[in-house]
Length: 156
Image (cartoon, rainbow, N blue to C red; front, side, top):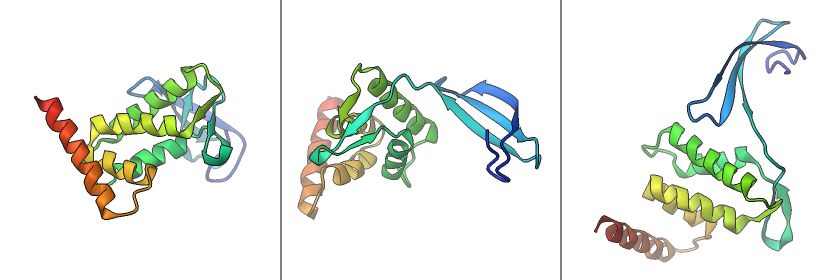
């Protein structure tokens, strides 16, 4: 593993343990050249999945990109990073175990929306505003009222 501080190619693993949700291995490493310590995460990748975007563009599934978009939707909300990690890991697991090498971006977006709906309604609306390309305040109003109606129905 290359050291992020001095770019030396060799480092030693000092400690390994599973993450809290058991979706990856956390490793503490020490560079054999400069002595700096850093953390890496090791995840199982079951298969390479390609996301099919609009206009038939294709790109490799990127967990970091998914995590960044969920984190952005949850920004300044009372959502623990652990919940975000669990959501992203769950979606990644669904994508990789679906048995398909390609998945439409619309399906991935719906998976994220379903997860965010259960975590935080504001984050859900934020994500939806970008995902569904809201153009006017009326779009927010209509979507927020539909979210509120569903929440009231769930409470009964």
